[in-house]
Amino acid sequence: MAIDFGHLSDKTMINDIASLKNKVKELLTKQKLGVLATQGDIYPYNTLVGYTFTKDLRFILFATMRHTRKYRNILKHPNVSMLIDNRTNHAGDFKNAVALTVAGKTVRVKKSLKTKYRRLFLKRFPRLKRFIHDPDTSIIPLRVDKYIFVQRFQGVSELKIKDI
Image 1 (cartoon, rainbow, N blue to C red):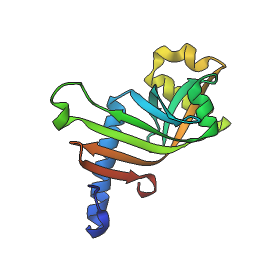
Image 2: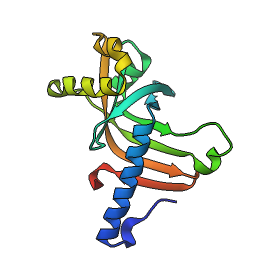
Image 3: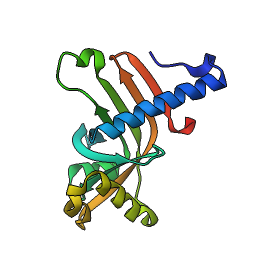
Image 4: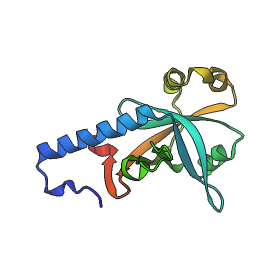
């Protein structure tokens, strides 16, 4: 069931959106890996990627080599999603695990933002300096349309970027 903000006052809506935004930001901060889903010619293709994000939550950034399948898929089909969760593979996950689906579109890095995005990525992953500076590596911005936050498998909340 999704949260329906239609019946709430404006003040309550902002508080609920702020709370959801904080939950999203907390999960994005605590986790460093996500499962990126791209569309191949026939089937979806999932890969594990390291990511970082912009403070305003409008972009998730990940890096890949240009010769990879995920890069080719992104060029053909820029709409992607990413799953980020906090599971531990213990029984408590059925009660405590949360999952975040990030839905959006990959875009080209503007030249003016290339250095900023590279620094942001390296701040989170300093050991990946050689990879990030490799001429065949591309930092890919995922322009977020919405976040879908799920807790206890049925508690679904949606945060649209236009609402924050």
